[in-house]
Image (cartoon, rainbow, N blue to C red):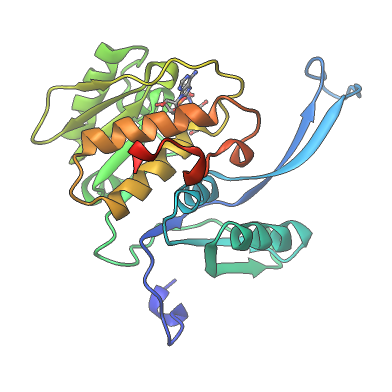
Length: 265
Ligand SMILES: Nc1ncnc2c1ncn2[C@@H]1O[C@H](COP(=O)(O)OP(=O)(O)O)[C@@H](O)[C@H]1O
Ligand SMILES: *[C@@H]1O[C@H](CO)[C@@H](O)[C@H](O)[C@H]1NC(C)=O
């Protein structure tokens, strides 16, 4: 798809643009998982907005970034609701379309050369097109994604350093590997020594979507604080993601700027 065909004549410039998925989460809480074919009682159900791309876009928007989503949803009530969700979070939906065919795959599109790119290889595939490593400014993944991509088991800071080196070998310029409660490890072509960035010790209630909160926050800093060291951006993104793990849900747990310490801005 050529993006220029879709550009409205009065085109607006966005500071964070996310190409990715928008998923509706249908979440049931049950005492245990049902066996195949078994029906069991659940005690709670909710429908939430998810999808890695959309999560990241919403976290960036909630921090105040002028954000747009590029993606496709179905021509159905979930799709309608999703578009409303973007609007109520201040995310532009100019590039979110609706289809009446089955769910559609998305392709990464570079919209604006001035918008630096973060690539989040989720879900990771071992034979990822090598161009993705080379074309991305910041390659950001979690432990299991790093392992799939490099074949190196990542379980601590030292092994994250090894996997990070392997990703630099593949052509990445900067690599961030998130390590859950441990925080993250940052490496780049000019600073090959792994730099460990610990996260705040918090009481984690639900870590779903923590990685997306991290990537969304990172996108916010890259767009609004272009002179900030990647290390500092990564530290602040860790702090923001660690807020998101302290309450239940994915997007509902993402903090707004006003709820965060002002020294993060
Ligand atoms: N238990 C936790 N305590 C504090 N921060 C956490 C915790 N889990 C995740 N985080 C924060 O979220 C970031 C991303 O988490 P991670 O689990 O690595 O990503 P993913 O959601 O992709 O698995 C971490 O770098 C950290 O800042
Ligand atoms: C990393 O992200 C993937 C999605 O690509 C997810 O399935 C996996 O559970 C995450 N790994 C960790 C260690 O959190």
